[in-house]
Image 1 (tube, rainbow, N blue to C red):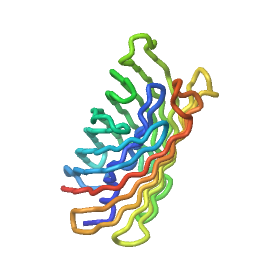
Image 2 (cartoon, rainbow, N blue to C red):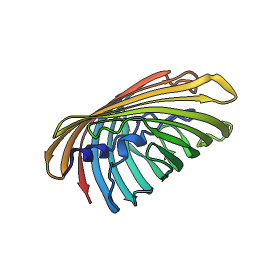
Image 3 (spheres, helix red, strand yellow):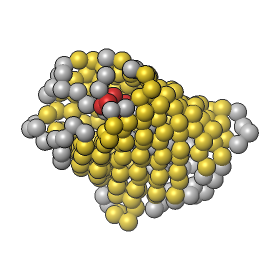
Image 4 (tube, one colour):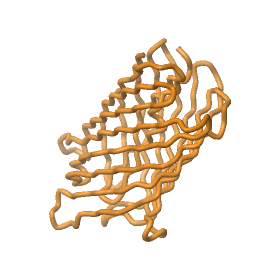
Length: 252
């Protein structure tokens, strides 16, 4: 199996807040020029430290269908998390994305996402976005991409005293996928997401994952994520980070 299967690293940016969240879809793509189904299932174990210590277990399912000109991506992400010594709580994300190939270097992206998060009191959060995606390099071992999207956010808190948020944001990302050896890959993505009506309100996030293929269909991965938000909700720090380790089983 080609080393590009390490693009299946199923590690989302794990800092879920009522005011901000960035999902790293770049780490979920599978590079393929053939018309076929592919997918992966993963299990992650992680420790997050921000205002509290959080232990989490993540299970993720990814399905992709690629016709060469059209790409369909579906992601279902479920998490169990424990804050300090409290009991586990649930959170989840469903993400659908469509890519339409315009030229060899240009694609059109459309996506929709829904989520819930008991820890952050998110009753429902929806995203809808569209924009171009540019391929900056054709080298199979060194791939670089740039995306510029416009997205609409709708957020409802479990706390009814908090006003429902509806805003438009720009989402600009730069992604690199490096394959220095046959069984090793490094995938890094940086996002910049300013609020359109107030550019001083922005989010910056970077996720870097290193993967090692241990068996034909089995990967070991380590991911580090850094997130900065200029305007988080009260009680949430502006800077957060996450380190996770896990295994990924791929199929096609």
